[in-house]
Length: 278
Length: 327
Image 1 (tube, rainbow over the protein chains, first blue to last red):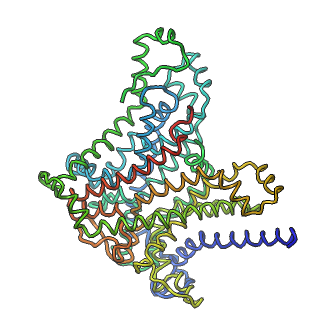
Image 2 (image 1 turned 45 degrees about the vertical axis):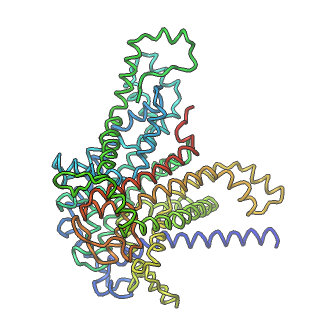
Image 3 (image 1 turned 180 degrees about the vertical axis):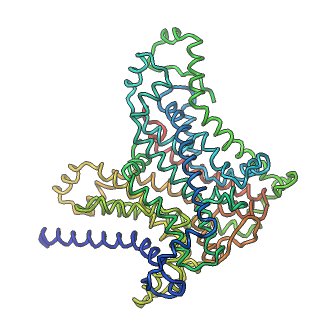
C-alpha cells in the first residue's frame, strides 16, 4: 500500500467514524423533537415522521397545570443558588489558595471529600432537620440555603484557578496599603472572571438538572416542584402518550442546551480546568 | 482544625520573633473570616448529619417519636435479610466494570476523533458535548422512549433492518446496557478533558516516533498513552465515584418503563425490571422515605460513604496535584 492510498483510507475511516458519532449524539434529539409533534395515534405507532405536524402539542404541554409553576421554581432555585454559591465560595477558595495556615492541606482534603460525597449519605438527618425542626419541607429553602455556605465543587474549581494568580500581584497591592478583602475584590476578581463564569454556569446547570434534592424536599407540595421533578411524574401523572411526554422533555432540555450554545467557551474551559490543570 | 498562621518556611528564626502576637491573632481572625462559610457548612451539612447517620444506623426509628437503640440489628438485616442490598451492589459492580470502562474508552476515542478532524471540529465538539448537559430526567425519558420495545424508533429501525429487537428497559438482561447507552450519549465531559490532554502531547515525539518507523498503533501505545496515564486514572476514579452516586437515571428509567409513579410513602418495588436497575442510593430513598425504616437506610448510607471515601482517597493519593498546586 502506497502512503497515498494509506492516507486516503485513513481519511475515509476517520470521517466514517465522525458521521457515525454525529448520528449517535444528534439522532436522539431529532427523534424526541419529531415525536413531540406527532398525534396521539401516531406516537403509538411505529411511524418515525409526524404526519400531520401537530405544533399545538408544545402549547398544550406549556398549559398543563403546574408547568408554569415548575418553570418559576426552577428559575428561582437555579438563580438564587448560583448567586449564593459564587458569593460564598470565592473567599474560601481564595483563602485555600493564598493564605498559609496549619491545617490547610487537611482543609483541602475535606473539600475534596465533600465533593465526592453522595448526597444520599447525609440526606436522612438533613431531611429530619428541615422537615421536623425547621418545618421547611415543601418549600425551596432546603435546596437554596445550604448553597450560602460554599459549594465544595465550586471551591475546588476556583481554588485551582486562583493558585495560578501570581503572588506578586497580590503583594504589590498590599504594599499600596490595600487590605485582604480589597485585594480580593479589586485585584483578584477581575483576573478570575473566566473561572467565576464557569463556576456560575456549572452551578446553574446543577440546580436546573437536580432531581434528588427537589424529590426529597418538595415532593409533598406540587406548588414547589421544579421542572426536573415535575417532568419525572409527567407521563404517569397525566396519563399522556409519548408525544406530549417528549414535548415536555424538549421544553425542559431546550433552555439548558440554548444556554450552553451561548456560553460554550466558558463552559469547556471550566470542564478542562477540573480534570487537566493541577 | 488549627487555623493559626503557619510559619513561613523561607524566613529565618529571627523574622518569626518580629511577628508579634497581635499580628498573628489578626491573621488567624482573617483566615477564619474567609473560611467561615465553608467551616459552618462543613459542620452543618457534612459532619453533623454524618454523625447522626452513624447514630441512627444503630437504632430503630420510623421518623416519628423517638429512636430506640437496637445495636447491630439494622446491620444484620441489611447484610443478611434485605433482598435488595446484594443485587444493588452487584449492579454497581457491573456498572463500574462495563459503564465506566466504556465511557473512558469512548471519551478517548471521540476526543481523538475530533482533534483529527480538520474542518468543522468546533461544531462537532459542540454537538458531541451538548447531550452531557441534558437534564438527567429529560435524557432518561428520551432514552426510555427511543428504546421502548413496542414503538420506539430504535427497535423500529432494527426491525426494518431485520435485526433482533431487545426489550431494553423492560428486560432485566438489557436494562443495564440501555443505561450504558444513555451514559455514553453523555460522554462529552470526558471527550473535552481528553482533547485538552491530547493537545498537550508534544508534536516532536510523534515525529520522532514516525522517523523510527512506528505505525499508528505503536505511536498510540508508546507516545499517546504514557502522556494520558494521569488523565485516564482521573477519569476512571471520578467515574467510579459518580457510579456510586448513580441515582436519577436508573430510578426514572425503572419508574417510567414499569408505568409506576414512586412518591413518598408509596410501596413500589424499586429496580424494575427484576431489581436490575437498583443502585445503593435508591435503597436509601426506598428504605428511608418510602418504608420509613430510618435505621436500615442509614446502614446503606454508611456503606455508600465508605465506598465513596475509599475511592476519593485513591484519587488524592495518586493525584497529589489535586491537593498541592502551588507547592
